[in-house]
Length: 433
Image 1 (cartoon, rainbow, N blue to C red):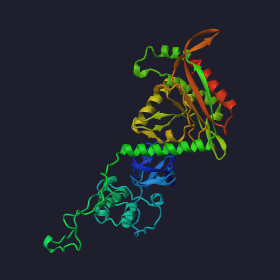
Image 2 (image 1 turned 60 degrees about the horizontal axis):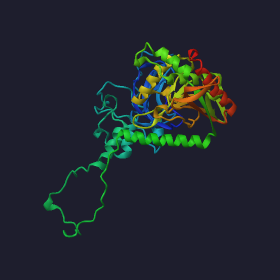
Image 3 (image 1 turned 120 degrees about the vertical axis):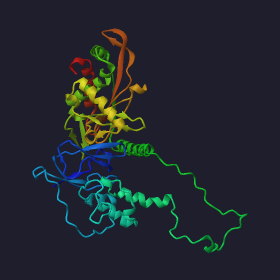
Image 4 (image 1 turned 90 degrees about the vertical axis):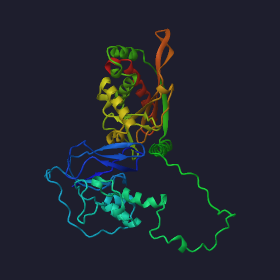
């Protein structure tokens, strides 16, 4: 029996909220299968499983927030017969409800085995998860009065908490109100001419889900960037790169293609960065426990601005191994899914370096902040025409200003200079990208 844990979907993540299970007890899963959707403070992320097996038990209900590393499900290895559904547990006495933190309860409370939709427990009542039953007892809520939104109409902790909060928003009439004639007069009622003093509350404005996510994302970005500037000794380098050859080559390659199939200059820049990372692995990795840990591949994180505000930097895996057409396709796919909220956990968890570009916003130079625990970030500005001398002759050339932020603990300026020079030399031979 193994455990499927809440993954860390970025250095800034400390907890996540389970949105949806994509599996049920008894399902056979292979490495890389999407098994759950988790909401971080930045996005809803599809989470993969990294070991094959059979889902034995779902521990956490949808809607629950749990800490990184907490158990989400129990998984049986494929060495055990995978065709049999897990046996129903023997009935046990009601468990006590110790006053422990919610995250610990969420990690420890087993969920009941899956049943057909609409199934009830042995007493004929709607199914209630053990965690929801504990919370209901603590809040004084009858689970039977809750509308279940879990699988098969099961009552979850979120359902119990929502029911408990309802009296705060609408005051139900008392069950046995005496007739008006039988009601005693208040002992000290102000005269009609003297209005009763009252506190004027501003009208409540319900925050939308988008507002809440935007606020949470800004807080997360603030914490992460503050940590980066507080802990990482940045140094910055800049270098202007002539893109004449690269853009001429790209124009020729794109001539027979339709607009949706054309390769953008961004793909060439990403490929040049990826190959530079392969050449200089000291900038492709993580600073952890006072030492540099090389990345397990060149997984280039791409900074993507979201339409509702905020920023994500998911990874294109093994970018150094992709041709420019495949890299362009990966970039389009990643951008679209990031803006639809359909990223995968592995894309958020393992970028080894980040690339950011504000050229589309008219910015010529961008000095980025390193995303810990990474040790470097590359920035590209807008491609502009500049006076450029070649063999003593001055002419107008398309030029981009590339910048590099480096963690000085991991590499010195000499390495950073070589890294930018490698990007430049790669772009002067676009046919080799």
